[in-house]
Image (cartoon, rainbow, N blue to C red; front, side):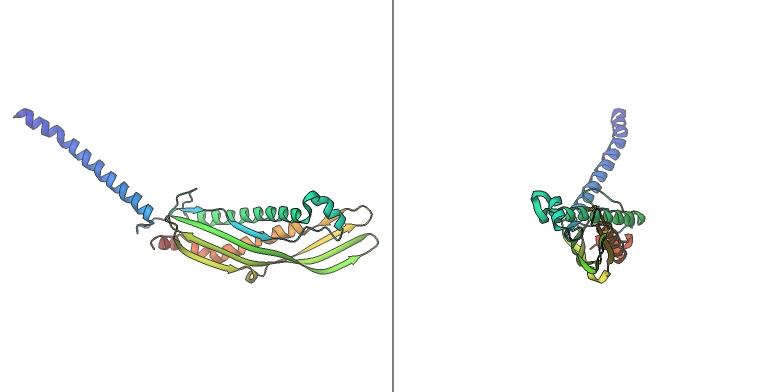
Length: 235
């Protein structure tokens, strides 16, 4: 009789421990299923976000240094003008991609939004389809220099969307880049005697891309606040 009571006394804590482990496993399983289904609990928790690398299609002016076409072709090598243009587009796309990512990360960090490399409750996608064009405003030719001045303009569309774990688009916004009224001046000066070229075009384009990233964040940051993301995650 005493042995039976002793066995029950010892088994009591064991049953309690097993019950607690079972409950924990059930809660974990439920949480995993909820994440897989894209469900987010209404407990004030901010959903984690995965940032994808911006998809960018960017058309840029052929990097002409003044009107010296022979020099341009020599710089291009066997690839010709298209190679120079593609290399410039890739370089400026990388600059824009980094600028946009830095601003998004900074904003989400300020909002205390958990950023994860993959598997976030929400995934933020960004896409640029943009073109940069030159408008020549002045061309002067003196004994020593040829000087070209003009304005750089941006057109196209920016799009961002938030998707769930299952890939469903939960929120989307498109912005006409022309509405940002972005422009910047450039100058190209070529020395007739030495052939030395002073060209501010690249720097002007990079500054304009930085400004583009700033203005785009200004237009979408309200939709990327923690409260808004919590609401979107419950959809």
